[in-house]
Image (cartoon, rainbow, N blue to C red):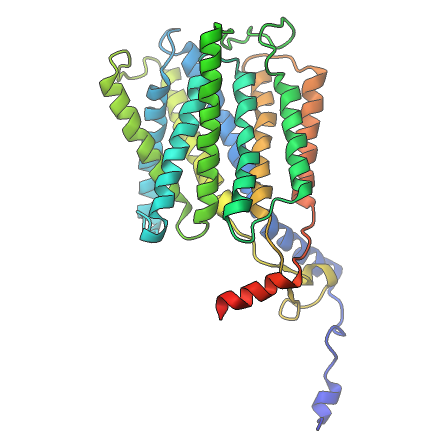
Length: 384
């Protein structure tokens, strides 16, 4: 039996539409919630590029032209990161600052993978042109997306995102022009970048760079598998502490590496800036890769109230999208090459930058396709 109030109650979906300003606010909020991970990773790449250019200056021009060893730079950078991370977690009272037992193995895997990733990169730039070392590191995001789609439930790496990743990699190749170290074009070493080494060291550097790719992919995948089960700084602290300990042992054991302080104010400033940028890189990168957006709501699209709007159940590709933002580091590196080293951009560099930016924007705005009905059945089975 229906009452008078039931007759007067509007049918579902018949409520008046939102005002344009309200709909715009909901759309902006929805875009932020869905793209927060990508934005954080993109910001991390800016600080990563800043850190890399400081590292390159210290390795080439530090110690009155002798250059700092990678272990010396890693010790300085990671020790600062460890101190800042623990102080921040203590000040904000982060729960479980040492992690929890269910994710302990993933935290250790992330730390070991991160060390091999960063050491492989720092070692390869000693014997490889910076462009060639950089282009090899960009194999890690594609490998990470594939790995996450295999090991993380409901994580997808769609064909469109695969295509965007390949296009981004093509853009990186156009910018870096790898395997052209012996050409005399505009991929010059005039800005102070290392010259081409002999064949043995060249191959050794490529092997070290590929080891860095595997390590970085392992670290990225571990961060995705940890997800929201621990604070982002816990993962950063494990990685930084592991790298600091290994660097300390290497400095004490290897007689060719001395534990010495910077000799000039510029070197102190670069090391301090490197530590700050390294901390921001790891914090933003970990927060961005581990972020899982809430289910997409139709309220931002059709103007319905949030409580009335059903949530769209879909297999998430947010991790693949966020990982694809790592390609943005090449664009920031182009800026630093121009400002710091005075490198002249070629037409291929501009084309490559356009491909990277276009792919990044495409990945950011591409709509996810809702999952078929069996996915919902699986969720019901898990909760039953």
